[in-house]
Image (cartoon, rainbow, N blue to C red; front, side, top):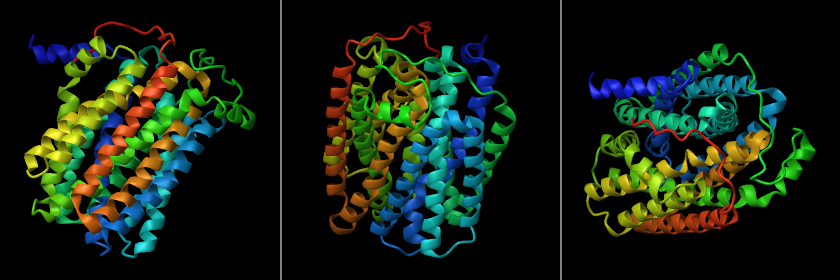
Length: 420
């Protein structure tokens, strides 16, 4: 049998059939979203005639709405159920995106984008918690597989987004609206049963089992579980947003077409898909625990942004920086929901939403900082701030790792990871 076919057969047999359907639908949704999100800054600047600083403010408002959405989604998970939260928020997101096609007024656009950020925020912790509860025996591999699939979709969507935007910017919103609506319809029929949450895990501290306002207040006092990983995620996303709010306008002003910026995200997706053996090697050698993976992620991301800071005179240097940074991303993003699913039990949706809120603070402040820096002084200060933010993220992740260094790793299936 062809080795590639054999590999995909192994992958197919490693997961429940319904998990494979969910991954496929999630891949399509991620592809649709990627058509839109890297181009928001350029849309505000080129279509609505606003400055890069004002474009950063749009993303700030969107991220602020996303913070509220993630906290609401995590807090209401057990009260309303994941189906109501996810399907409802996705359907409303699709409606909002479709309306952008007919909007040419700046503040109306800002209002719609904020509503979209809120609805999208509600869905994120709910989806992560749903995966962890429904397929808890496979969740380590599933979080990673969904991450790989979604980012492959991001690469495809980003590449397509540049092409679509070169024809019509509003068309990008129409396509993303359609894929979001299709994902909502799929989940409406797919999510028939409420996953039964497991009891709270002991590794993260004593967590309240009842899902009410008092249990949320008790969970908030458990700082060691969420605070430092949340602060690290916040500064990681401050650094991350420089790609769309510093590097994107820089490449445009240097004369590169939109497709060259989109190509960076295509490279990101290729590395995520093809680089799984590298990540597996790192996890089996220098970063065997979840907390060590999180620290290693910050080291890699800092190295990638630092490289671009010193070497950004050629497009090829941005490619190298993207590859190094992507390795850090690959270690971090699947590890965070896995950590909460395994360490906090029933309270996982709340902590996922809370930490997602921290991350959205980074998404919120980064574009404003970079937009104004770029308007005044160009790309070098943007890269310097991005490198400093990634260093601060590393410090917080190190503190988090020290607090959980002796924690027992939950028993999971240790069979060799599937290569993608």
